[in-house]
Amino acid sequence: MPHPLGMDLPLIQAPMAGAQGSALALAVSNAGGLGSLPCAMLPADALRSELEALQAGTTRPFNLNFFCHPPPTPDQARERAWRDALAPYYREAGLDPEAVPAAVSRVPFDARTAHVVEAYRPRVASFHFGLPAPDLLAQVKAWGAKVLASATTLAEARWLEARGVDAVIAQGLEAGGHRGHFLSDDLTRQAGTFALLPQLVRALRIPVIAAGGIADARGVAAALALGASAVQIGTSYLLCDEATTHAVHRAALRSDAATHTALTNLFSGGIARGIVNRLMRELGPIHPLAPPVPLAAAAIAPLRAHAERAGRGDFSPLWAGQNTSGCRAIGAAALTRELAGT
Image (cartoon, rainbow, N blue to C red; front, side, top):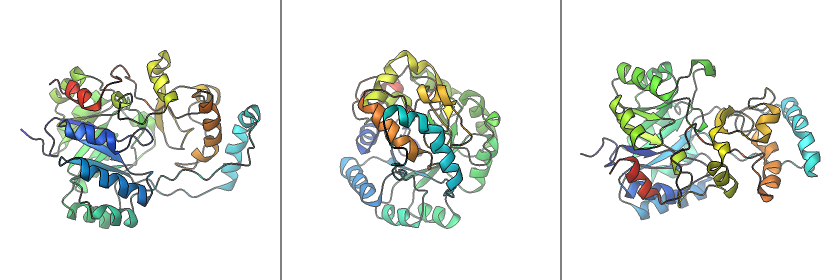
């Protein structure tokens, strides 16, 4: 029978900014899962274009994902210290450390974004790093959208339930990409998926979605057996035909390097899990001088572009979860059906 979120299969494709657009979401939704579009890095015109593509490409539900991080306060002293920490790499590459571009924007959900999205009346909206302001959340619910949000601890899950979300995504510590924590940045409080999931299922009255480290049909079945109403999977989709994953990132996922991931703040300023590369090894994966999300990304960008032109991922955010065994270079629809065991 159909899932409460409207899909036929209990599978949600995790939103992966920088590695996908609407094509991946459409393939998953049309296969019976719930495709997701990451919206936090899309300016208004690009967001409209992707929403038009989604509406034209499917009558199935899809999920629009937004960030709710607090806008950072620029700190010139910290920014200078961060650039100084990276200066040896600039010199090695023959780059000007003063020619740093503006940071790629990661915009928290706001009234302007809500205005763009409202015309499309999405059936599902999800939030990372907490929830938007109450008036904005009420606006999303008034569209008729089901609201999902990430929790990394039981305390966060209870906080979300108390504010009216329709389901909680239990983001285990194994998950790739940015951690969704928002009540505490103490990583020792965070648990793996199969430790966190049953706690949330037992404590909450609303559905719980498992996320993190699940890469195949057996993992999906295990999560469902522990009470998950659905499973959200990202890493396994990174090699799919419809993904826009960079060639350097794809190569890393296919290599032995993919067996070693770590949490890092080097690439955006936010804590995120990725494949360990040169910068993470040499500076340490978490650096005290990295400016808060998303400000750290600006000084990394020239180094990343220079290395990627040479086919190296030394300075790239090679986001991946701890389990990359499910990565397959196949169509996303076929992968979705495999994950569901159909």
